[in-house]
Length: 203
Image (cartoon, rainbow, N blue to C red; front, side, top):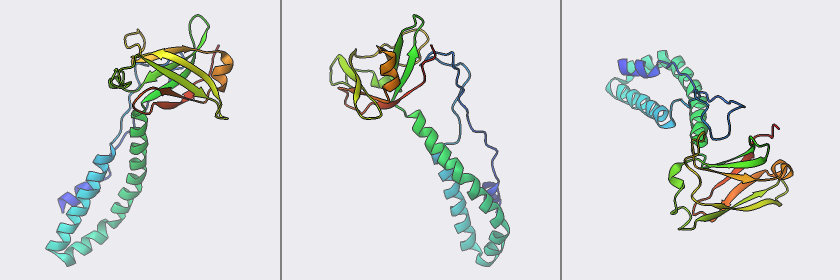
């Protein structure tokens, strides 16, 4: 019974947070934000272990087990209520971490507006991703589906620029194009690399 009691104890959890620093350029590390939390597999494993423990207890001594289950039912209900949002949170967090492309509006130090196009994984930044091609096309559309920007970028992206943690490209654009751009994608890649445009022009 100690195993069941241990599994039914509500763990103390701290959700991770990622801080947003408005003065930090896109792609640069903020220095303090970390993404944390319990992954979905761990939560599911705990639930499965609890079910197995219950099944074993019932098979060994049905009458005694049923009586004890009635006693711990309130705790089990609390655990289910807490676990449900945790599973949903973990699933959404994993989805964010797997973002393969990020596109952000930016005004550089010279006052020129541009898009910062960043890859979410460095292993995408290879010629294998483009089947050997050394160029890709960046296409951005507005909310109406009309193309507002279509430009060629060299591939692989820059991966050693100070202040940037991921492979990226700077795409010059007018303020009007940046304001209208709603979604961008890279054409010429073997995998689908597409993302909504984030951020606002601050200058």
